[in-house]
Image 1 (cartoon, rainbow, N blue to C red):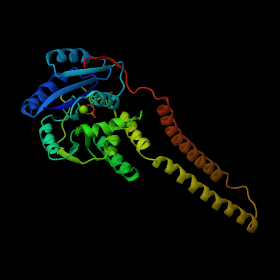
Image 2 (image 1 turned 90 degrees about the horizontal axis):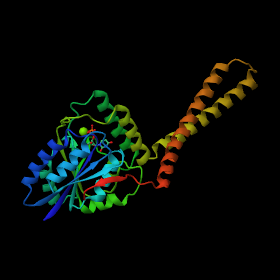
Image 3 (image 1 turned 45 degrees about the vertical axis):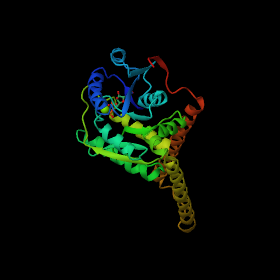
Image 4 (image 1 turned 60 degrees about the horizontal axis):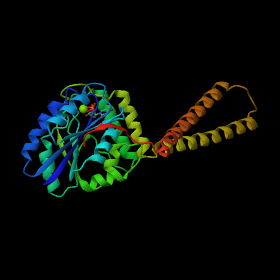
Length: 309
Ligand code: UDP
Ligand code: MG
């Protein structure tokens, strides 16, 4: 029989692991004459009892496995570790807080059998989310899709079912700065989406603050487009052209009307304006250099302290 691997990154999720397993075990039963399930929890340096609970459930069920990191490396690292260690013919990635409804797996598997390589999920709405967050999310997807060649689908979750071939392709992308939403899309293949109504987390708290999301979206821009660099080039060109006009104006005035020392205020504003643009441009370049710096160090993306595989 073919194996379905479920990868579940966990950070401080002591309350949600048991309900999650209870719900997915139902789906496992329903698919049991077609698929063997393999659960692969990745403990991302949790500070609560997550690891202890994972050890327990791994004893209770012999198809439950876990990897445990030496510290918190972030969800992206957890996903990568899961993908690298999963043995399945089909691989899915799920949040443990049941915001990704496990029962969708049945429909997703049907679509895979129908010939898709990837079945993704997307939220049909953003109910239960602060309006300011929705506003910025929408803005992010609008902008990134304008400036990046890699399409990113608004509302698409990380929850997706993939064939072994797709996962192997994703694993070939060995970059350190991992922005999964982009990487998943970059590899291509035939992708289909299932929409569902947004669900709230069953217990515990989201580990994403507004600022961490804002920073995460910056990652998306830096990793998947050169638009910020182009922006600074254009800002540079336009301020250069404006200064030429300014010089012409000053010279013509000097020749025709004669000199004057008025205008210091405008001079100061122009200096501030140009200085600001220069700092912005240097900052943007710095961002890219920092990324290159990290890539060239070739540090491991995660460190496993304990595992039962
Ligand atoms: N997560 C993780 N490492 C982190 C942060 C989150 O492995 O540093 C996991 C978390 O346990 C959950 C999933 O990533 O299974 C999604 O996190 P969360 O529910 O906090 O994000 P949200 O659903 O609010 O976007
Ligand atoms: Mg969540």
